[in-house]
Image (cartoon, rainbow, N blue to C red; front, side):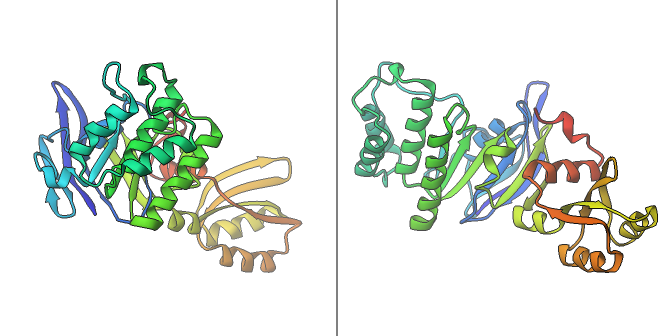
Length: 300
């Protein structure tokens, strides 16, 4: 488990992280959501032991990560700003990472490169941005670490490769218990893979929750009611987080149990009544509005 305890990180007068606390359990895909400048990369570098926080600490399986080679060896960090040797090839990167990660699987790496039609002997500076992203992921997976930190890893990848990498992550989780931590500003990229999500905004985590639990406790209802009194009845039983109306059609975002909504439907006998699934983005918008934040200004 990764434990982030009241971490504060500053760069001169800029506070990049402010009293950040979170737990990342093993065997889950943790999604770290936030706009550019929210502090995602700083938090990732602090988790991997590159940065030392001014306050607080990061523990990897109970051990402090900063200046601790044993703890660092459990983490592979894929930076958004990737670094490769000047005029280097993937084969050069293999030799480099083998010195840092004793469990680096050379054969696994070469097989993955072949699957993606990437030449391990070609100079990396001739690779496209997407090819470099793929190379970084293959190096990270082949390193054999327990935790894989991915900073905007899916940015710039085409949909087919993006889905292939997600499938690869799931296989690594099943085969050897790898735990991916994926930072992104794009909610849609993470919705189909994350088990747990945390929202980072202005250097602080606003909340961190299990995605399934969030989806169970909030839902969207579209309905056409027989009278305004029926809307009052819905509001008495369920907190209405959001209400939209188009003609007679009402769209309500409600908090509660869907089974209770079905029971209310039998009581009210509305003209039309349908429960709809919420996207991750809609869930976060609703949660933020409850907390007093204008979520529409946080994301593109």
